[in-house]
Image (cartoon, rainbow over all chains, first blue to last red; front, side, top):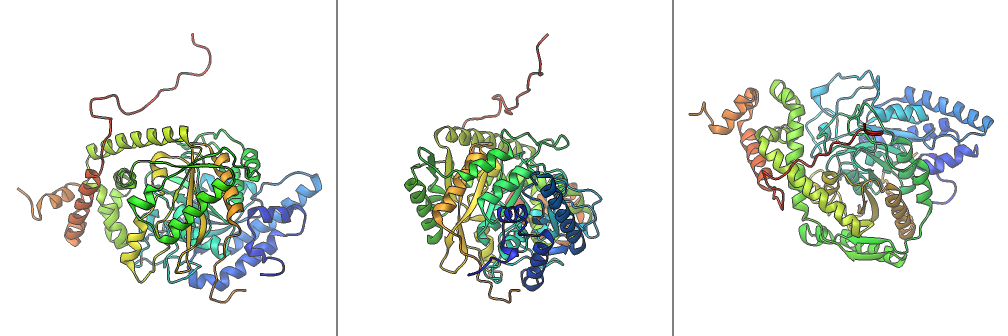
Length: 477
Length: 66
């Protein structure tokens, strides 16, 4: 595309630069995004509640705040004036929140989640609530009032999930930042399926207060952005210790550490462990996924990294632990509703959430014991490697008219290991599969090594070159 | 002795899932199968019942000790 980029296509860093030099205006950026949404969302089903008035007020406030910063010579937050989509399991005061379920029909929270408090404080423009799989679990449902979000690369395909609206919305140009959740890969999956970036920081880095839980010992708030530099900016703004959230910790880095790290691209001496067995043995991947991983390994090695094969436990071990813990914890949350109003759930979640009723205490203890072993193994691995390179999804996104294929591809992934262990991980587009849909790689790092993780992610993007954009075969504004 | 439908549905009734027992007994039987499959997939390398577990640490209080 020649000429200036449309405003809706700008990421967090580009918006910040334009706001800083006065060439961009938050109200005009919002109008551009709303035009994009009006044209494309009837096809993509990203928004379950679009708050035009609230977003307009926030954009006006951002305009005034920017003027004050310019007058006083002060530096605004990188999220000031940035359009944001919020997964519909995250509380935004005054906006409906159903978690994609009839169970919570009519629910309107009167408080903001911690992450939304921060977004408001730094002047982000909250556009509204976006699609989620029911209660952030499992597969897309077709028997619920809200239709599932669709993939901007091809609306006949799913966009991944459960943070499906966040992935589709960032890829389609509706907003520059999606706030999602990630319990077994639910941010990195839509990012991989939609060709954008999905970051799950270390467990406890971003407060989950006000985010409806799926499995609290596995749940993370996750971020979807257009590139790794934007992920660094968003994480720096949103990672804050929260005394009212028991898992929240103060990260050992500052926003400046994340930003500075993202600028550096030298990889000489970096020890990269290439976890091949996930996609070669455990779940043989689509050739485009495997080729993307080989390209990534070659690019990192060419930039000076020492890339060597690395073995972890088989992926099925992580899945087994994740499944037992998730089912047990989700049952604890949903038992009362499964007793009182099971018909209010879609079939997919009736089937999934009741599994925990048939686990016993010993099952959960054994899963937690195995989890401790897997955490120890991962921690030891990061004494030998600085970064792990592995697959995210083993396949490009499946078609809506092939539910069996979609169910199969949802399970073929290597994201869950990092929910079981709590280590930070990021999904990055590596190219396109034969069917024209995105495929991705995944990088992971030691606990709270986000500055390094984001530096390597940014370096990979620079080596890979610009990511292709969705062809959008329907009218664009 | 079961009330009908076998031990899975008995357990479901005991847990208060009577509405699902009545409407979708097959769903519950399938869920029980999935639970058993999930639980049986857990393999322990080293930790064993009776060995020190869980891996919990209690942080010492901040500041000088008395």
